[in-house]
Amino acid sequence: YDSSTERRAPLFGYLSRAGVAESGLESLLSVTKTKSRKSSAQDWLRQAANLERNKLWAHAEKAYLKGADRANALVMGGKRLYFEAKEAKDAAATGRLLHLAAVALLQGAAAQPEGAAADRLRSSAAQVWCEAAVTTVPTPR
Image (tube, rainbow, N blue to C red; front, side, top):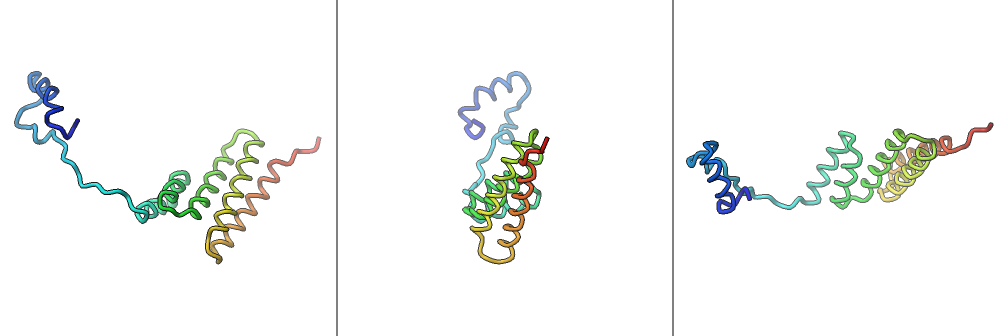
């Protein structure tokens, strides 16, 4: 609608008669088409890294998926689930989300090349798993 002069003519005519728009300003009111391009995998990965730096885990997870980086998407999913667990209202939901976070972190570690980054992810997964176990263990009465 904004880019079609023919389609907006009736509205522009009405606004012109009402004194809101002037004929000379029509060129200023038209929207020019931009030369947009489809985002590449590199664009998505760059955006994902920025979202990760800003701790926007869910958005970073989606951006990594669109950038075809499954390993980092799993890691972001694990972080997202971990922080969702911290906000959960009951212990059962917290424990379930922590277990899922640990699994996602382990899968992310398995998808990474061997090295320090994968080791850190396995360590983080183990810590989350222990936290989940403590959360879901029923307290003795």
